[in-house]
Amino acid sequence: MNKKALIIQNVIYIVLNLAFGLAMMSYISSSLGNSYVHEQALAKQIGLLIDEAKPGTTFTINLEEEDKLVKTAEQKSRIVQIKGNKVVVSLGSKEGYAFEFFTDAKISSKIENKFLIIKMEKR
Image 1 (spheres, helix red, strand yellow):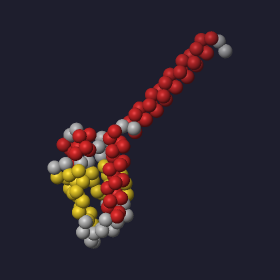
Image 2 (cartoon, helix red, strand yellow):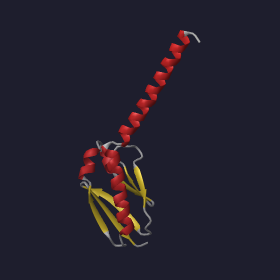
Image 3 (cartoon, one colour):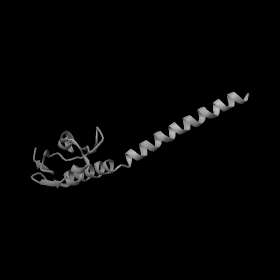
Image 4 (spheres, one colour):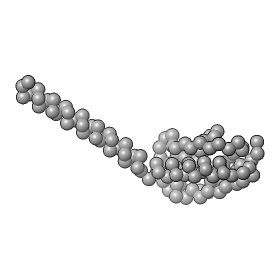
């Protein structure tokens, strides 16, 4: 093998390793970001609260801290959504973090003045 081919092969190897390393670093930094951790924690907490509650219960959850993490009014209106049997919390990522719950109660939710109000009723 001549020297020119060996140099090209080494350059390609280094460039590919750098690209892979940068991709891994960007994934790690996005998954360790503040909003990702808040999404997971809030979705799990709300899901577990719903699972343990009895029909007729009303929750009021303060979302001030999460409200600071979102920027637009559209994002603020969809910080927490209850879709079917899932709690979806979206603070920065497009699809957010979803956590399933298992209750058979009818659940309604709304956000008013940085507070999430969840009402559970019998079906």
